[in-house]
Image: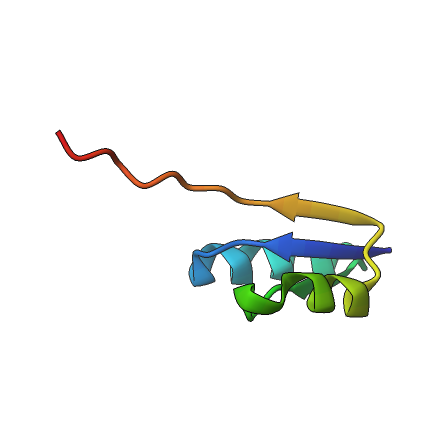
Length: 59
């Protein structure tokens, strides 16, 4: 099973990827956020995990 992992925190990406690979999942990630659709098409994921961190608002 291919899992597309979208995570902007490199350390967290590597931890999640390593854990999923221990369970025999194939993991690909988006490296160039300007080419998301191309990388999505190349991965052909069965499942996606998206991380979204909202920047804090300025007071």
